[in-house]
Length: 403
Ligand code: CTP
Image (tube, rainbow, N blue to C red):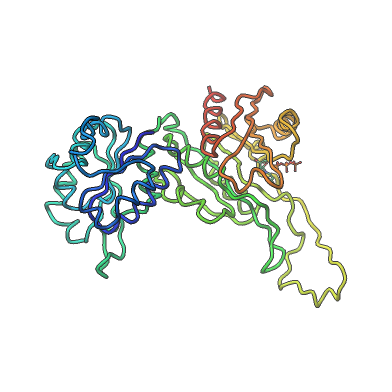
């Protein structure tokens, strides 16, 4: 997508560097238009390096390409972050005194503003009126957040976090083809305690499941995300998303309870969590000590956990679509397919997403390769891409399966 990020003169401009980075990382073409004042906070070099495109503030540069309107016409999305009180007033008045002003007048793309200013300025009747005017014209306002401000004071006025702004802005541009659906997604790896300090866990980072949840919410679904252990930072986008409600679970038993509670009345349940198949038969009350074992090997008895997916299938309500994931160590695509088909039948799910994992593939990375197998044992999608692309392919398959 072609995204214009306008930056106006506030200290929060330093956080916009991270916003631009997130958007570029997500595969978008990002053009930054700072105002002259914004460059007092973050310089041109930084914006060019981070966006990987030339940056100018002036309508008089690059005149041959009619840059003062070309950027706005080309944009699929415009984000102004931070939006100062002054820039909001200029926008409300339709002023076009610089490149950002002309771009905002030339665009028909969705416009998102992330205000940042001191609480008094945010509450001033002029700003309140300007925000009302902009909202009436269809401008989307993200934030500001309540919290400590630069002068040591505190209150509403902090610019929202970059992940929140990115999620809210990108959500505006996606088709809302899952609107009206209530969905439950589980993600992450469960941890089964052995004693108060140790557990049995697995390498799931939670990235794929969280991407499935965020994709659904972006496409208009109402999402409950039941998250077991996830790696640092993986939950940021989901936690910030207005369409996602996050519920945490630690063990397989807790995850099962949380998923079953959320599944009541849900249209789709997707079990992307890596649920432990075994847990300790007895969880030691106190830390197990080497001293107590006296130098000999120890044995921990493991018992099977409940198969959450199998129970969901047994207890499913009419019309509910249930999707399983299977992480398999397969040597090639045909073995992955065969294993996937067998597991889909055994689990009785409507769709099974099979992905190949191994010592060096499938877990911590941001990419994934999967096969989606339907109830007729057909491979209905074969996707090799980012976890978001895989998530969208899964939802496309769910839509087709539901007819
Ligand atoms: N799953 C579950 N409850 C469990 C174990 C797994 O709901 N106790 C779900 C996972 O979330 C996933 C699917 O079942 O959606 C497949 O998980 P997997 O571990 O591959 O399946 P198993 O039945 O454990 O098969 P196996 O160990 O024989 O490969």
